[in-house]
Amino acid sequence: FLEEAIRNLIKLTKSEIDVIACDLHPTFNTTRFALRLSEEMNVPVFKIQHHHAHIAKLMAEYDVDEIVGIACDGFGYGIDGSAWGGEILYCFGKEFKRLGYLERHLMIGGDLATKYPLRMVAGILKDEENFEEWFLSKADYLPHGKIEAEIILKEARRKHFPETSSCGRLLDAVSAILGLCYERTYEGEPAMKLEAAAEGGKNVLNLPLNFKGNIIETKNLVREVFHLFNKENIKNLAYSTQEYIAKSLAEFAAFEAENLNVKFIGFSGGVAANEHITQTIRKIVESKGLKFLYPRKVPCGDGGISLGQAYIASQML
Picture 1 (cartoon, rainbow, N blue to C red):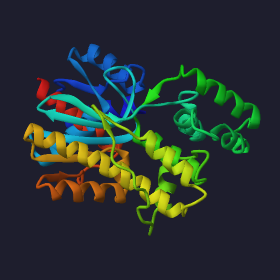
Picture 2 (picture 1 turned 135 degrees about the horizontal axis):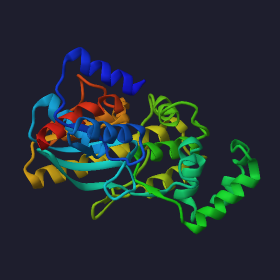
Picture 3 (picture 1 turned 120 degrees about the horizontal axis):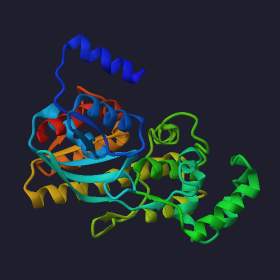
Picture 4 (picture 1 turned 180 degrees about the vertical axis):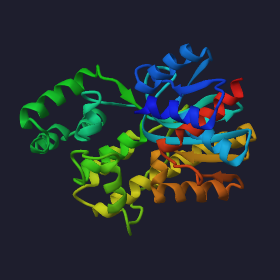
């Protein structure tokens, strides 16, 4: 259907194709089709990193040449082959530089960790005191119960699974710890339920922002939520999680923007649909005299990716 739609659009608009842009991921159906189409039309194909495209769509919408962008979502294929999703990027023209990212955590079972966020919790808190006992008490929320829970704990100790800097997976993990969502049945469900639970909450974490080089540490956040679960209101813990993540991203991005003498900070990706996180980032950015950019004419999620890809590809000609 995608192929048919593209060919029809080319015909209807009488377009002359100069270049094709697609995602960097090597096995996406769209990537394979782009490569086939480029051979057929004898035009170059440019593979655009997912989060670069998220920020580039802001550059296109607001007509800016350079920007420090915060790109947060569930997954994007990184230039190093790993799973990205909580990135601070400096984008200029057709180029970008990765300035920093959220701390990477194990995805026990790979893609299964996106469906069952308890797996993400195990990847983050595997070494925490009393964690195994708590995890086994949640075994009924896994498809294969206690047997699966024990295997997950065993695999977590082996640490041979891929890691991700994904903000989406981080929010999923906290959602599972708070008992809000143990299985994702639709896109973004655990994070959306966390956002809903945070409504009317307040920040109860006295947790300093923690940066280690270009890494924004988050294990300390998850650990704190885990230990406060029986002592604090779930609403406040959900609110505090979003507040901490937003402040960390905003402060890191603002520091880098000031160092680079860049006036614009953008926020895009699926997580930008979270109003609390977005408004917290906005307040911090604007308090420092910087301009905050947010996608308005295109979706903040992957629905706007194609504009960013097209913008970057046009710069490459």
